Length: 460
Ligand code: BG6
Image 1 (tube, helix red, strand yellow):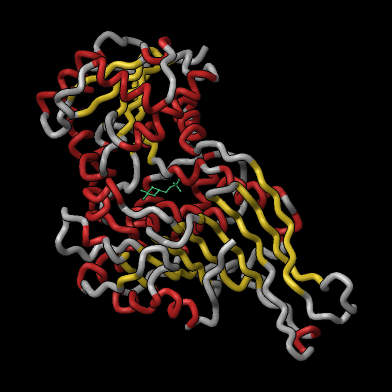
Image 2 (spheres, rainbow, N blue to C red; image 1 turned 60 degrees about the vertical axis):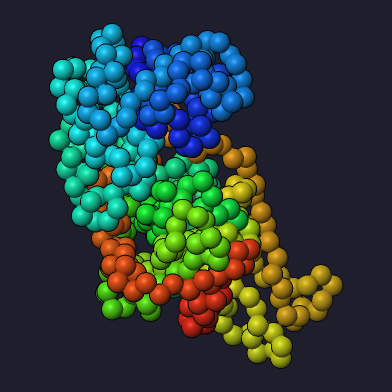
């Protein structure tokens, strides 16, 4: 018999709760995965929200008015900065004697320290088991991430901490691990001898829109590179774990991060590009901002498998189209066909399309149909497409079941901040930021950045 639990959502009126968490909880409820859930307590600070208004928000969010589901919920108004208001939550939780508490911090990162500190004040009066789920970015830089880790660990044991990165819940991202370690055909070529370089991209059509308050303090590097893109990198680059255990898998990911070559402060311009989309500053809430809405970073992993293979990570808002992908670009085939006039065979590619579809594409060269045996080969592809399952749903089940494989460990988070820290520092000190037109491929400087290496950005 599984233990009973209560979910407590901080940021219960926020975008994340409304767009992801409530719909996911509704799905889990329909799949009978919330049978042991005694209550879901949502907290929010808006003063004019009572039970009725909250239920309406819930109904709008899940597009359903299932009474049993709705009756699982309770809304508690708390201004997160006011310590005295946490007593409302304490009172609400007091009647649950046996349940495990799952605290979900779906709030902006600047609130994490204060929520944890305030929880600390009243949780000492409870002996319930507990877990805490923390959204990204975990910290604001290396120092604040370390401080946050210290504060959280004063209250929770590492086994109770779920640092979430929703990209790890995405089907295709997990397929990187699956494909690599369950097929012998890729193993022999997954290294510097065959791979020219790797591109990991999260390109978005949408701009910052309603999230300016959060985004302007964070920027693309902290919002996407330090976490989502770096996580994809670890799955592509890791060694096979000794066994299927969360410790072994997370351990191998950390080894990759530790092998990433540090970028020196003075080398930041050589290894990165940033940009801001035109119109970002038109928002009346900001007059001057150097926050990047586009970031590209080149990293090297100094180990036997990856020596000399660049990993290009890039992300941007207000670009031509939404595409999140990881593309393995193999070396060009030497000899033979390149001796033909006008023939430069393309590179073979394995592409993982993460968003909008869940797809794996193998692009290779084949002689054109009906051509002579010596015709110049042309790119051809084989594709596999699967359904996409909401990443948060996968991760929520793991949280309930206590499986932390797809969550980020303390040393992992700190090392990933260490890697981006010189970039944060350099960009802070040098406010010159290229501007790019909305709907474009990003700043011109980003094209030059990769062209300098004799390569181009790839799309799937
Ligand atoms: C979030 C970022 O973590 O990921 C957003 O904060 C970004 O800025 C989003 O838009 C992208 O995620 P997805 O799942 O929509 O590709």
